[in-house]
Image (cartoon, rainbow, N blue to C red; front, side):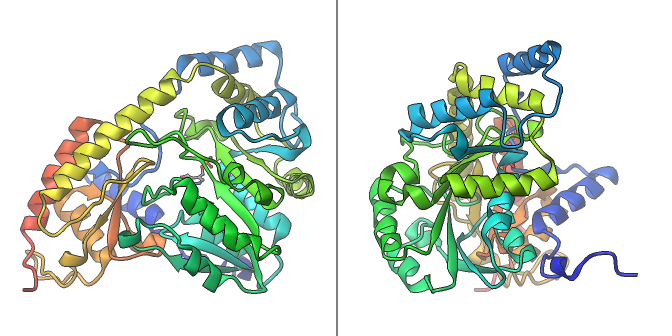
Length: 403
Ligand SMILES: Cc1ncc(COP(=O)(O)O)c(C=O)c1O
């Protein structure tokens, strides 16, 4: 009996899910595993946000909320976008969903026809591809290698657009590479998109607050205002406020697009949890000191990991400009022989070796459509990251490399 519809056939089990499963199994066997596969902050949600949820529940905000979000939360999103991103939206140009993930799904479900192409900058967040495939679209990976800072170039974009291109997905700064775009970079991409009015732009800005080296953030629609009427700005509270479990994300864009996305969401879950929306509104409206403190901690961890990887012969890591990952280059380890006599033929095998030998769970670059790399998350204490780096160094030193 086949239970799953053929729509799901193109979706392969995700490598990050495999890594996290393998790490759990190793832990269950009593092995000492440090899981650096996960993409969620290790901090607690700030107390004032938790308290806002408590108060909302006590006030009786426990009924079905409006499908597109409570007025309080949509007003908080509008105020945030104006205050922090210089973007003006109306109440009917904002949708609140169960995480940015659902915003992304709603957008694709609402707009894609079978065969439509969606451009994405590899390495990219795995969900981008899978939702497009589930919906019968074509995911077009534009490879953005390390030597261009994992950034899309205008020339690449120009060459990739076809009459079937429906969306270009941008992720500022990016998971997994921590790539950052300057305003000039975005303007140059915008100039290409000006010439192709049939293309919609999705700017996923969920890591906007985790930016290093004194950088400030610019939202795509603010840098390219003439494209705002075909841009969907996606964001959420998961990463900035350590609220992954609350499941609140939001999108802002043209009214007809938001209306279509609301139609999708009405058939899936109605509105997102009313109590979590009250918490998210408190996060956006309240003090931002915790956000700055989290970013500072992530920057210190980034510095530690970059310095330690630089000292390991065979691995490379240019300092990521944002987000909380290290996408570590392992080209020099491909073809190397392990102490057990196995040859490492790709980054999935390097990752499996590091899990087995060093007890460090990481995600292979192939999961993000760019090899040979593996991604570690820096959502762990300095101590734990230091231990992880020690163990990786020992395991890499045990490899016999091709000369
Ligand atoms: C680039 C990117 N976008 C969106 C999301 C989804 O975040 P959430 O659904 O928790 O809001 C993630 C989570 O890892 C991400 O890395």
